[in-house]
Length: 110
Image 1 (cartoon, rainbow, N blue to C red):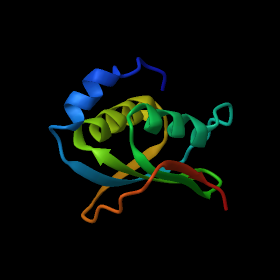
Image 2 (image 1 turned 45 degrees about the horizontal axis):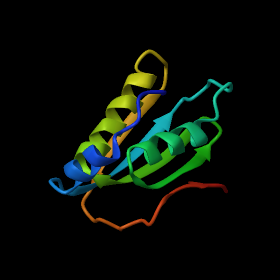
Image 3 (image 1 turned 120 degrees about the vertical axis):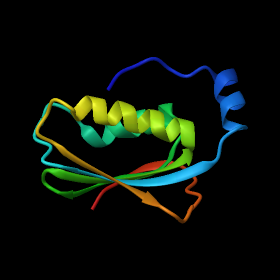
Image 4 (image 1 turned 135 degrees about the horizontal axis):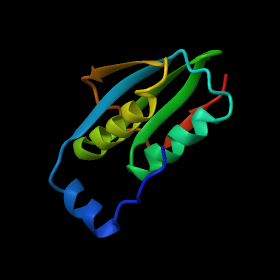
């Protein structure tokens, strides 16, 4: 899930022109124990200037909620789906109508 970073001037310019969206993502059947998925997804969300959370909902599944500018959220989703494209993981992405205005992106532990 590594990639280039966003230029701060470019992100300010883009974010002033787009609207905010919220998405709920469920990742099922994650079996690669070599990666710390909550941290990797946290890092990716921060890179794309998104707020929300990731939490483990059972041994092999995560719930992720992201909120932010449309272009950044779509970039996050594209990277996330590309990363899991060749794996057995199942990704479900749902549009959420209400914007909750999260202050940050967090890893939630049970």
